[in-house]
Image (tube, rainbow, N blue to C red):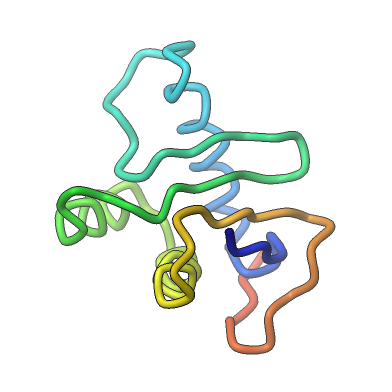
Amino acid sequence: MLDVSTAHIDGRDNEILTELAPREHGARQGETPPFRVLGHGYGFMVDTYAVDLGKATADARALGLSERFLAVLDHARRQDCRWANLDMDADPSPVLENGKWS
């Protein structure tokens, strides 16, 4: 698991992930998220795996998720991590760009 700061995503990413996370548990109607998203109170656990990575990436972009978010998932996959923990208490990674929160 890659444990990185939520600073690496945008404020808009945070809004989108907040909307997608309840769908994982069937609590909300809507299409299945392109990547599994679990909210945990301090951020999100995001499954970096997708059967069709190209389609999942295109779907994530269509939802409005940023390239920074996709870079976090790509970085996690390159580290052989199945999950990325986006946590507000985690340290930022020097190899990932910080997002815009304003």
